[in-house]
Length: 392
Image 1 (cartoon, rainbow, N blue to C red):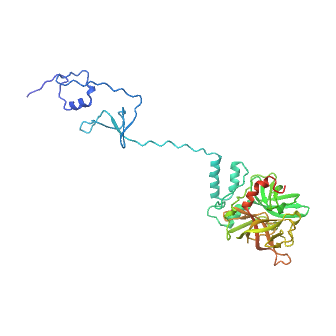
Image 2: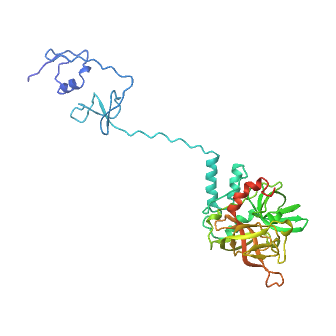
């Protein structure tokens, strides 16, 4: 048996050439150098940049010099042919999409909170205006579009739901003047007790008492009047936390729309009736004289329409406005109350109705001829009324 004897370190390594090629700089210092081997190439470590910059070499591949060994890479020239590549040189990394910058959290200030609460309140049901006012701390008038609903979801057009949602916003008004007493209605528009009503309900009054739907009574003062539009704004004394109505958009009202009227006819607080819109833009003439604005024969306020006078003489001083005509039953005491659409929004302030002669019981009462001041007219006049009205 022939035995080949080599000195320590001279045993043949079948992978020596590959290791020499892959790791020329890692020769062990204590290993002897075979004089037949070519000298190792001079190696001068390349200066490392302070910060490596990526270089894109082809779509989807990025070269990162000096990439840490623990990173996943495919090294050029790496591998021993047995699936155990140890690799060196430049690492080739598959480009990773940059993570998007984190979105800044939007500050939910009063405006955002207000929008969120308004949407939730509209979806849930009544009390929208009250919720908005309580959260903002301001007594602002709640308005809506023609599609905003203040009744519970799925209850649009349900008269019972509309009555339940809006009735707390309608009040009964008893005004005392030198000419006597009159009874009318009003619509709460702010939680601290601003109320819209007809001018003829409170005109010349020396004392005004208001009763809310829950039976509470308040004293009220006139803030401003506009006899040309038959509107007045009064304010309750010491009121807070009231449920305000939501004022709609009368420009979206159509002939044939179903409407609900709420008021206090003949002192019957919270009476609800319904009907349709019979006509639009009717020219209705009413008296601006305080002495004329009292109940006449038949129990209604005097007004003029189509050249005819109803419920007595309107006098010589009159004003004319465009009105919504409705066949919803209106009776004395409904003046100043609300005409409401199927979403529960107030679209008009009831102002005049024909009341047949009281000569016989068969002729008395509503005959389906009533008129309301469009709510857009009210909204456009509100600033004037708050400033004292056009009559001052």
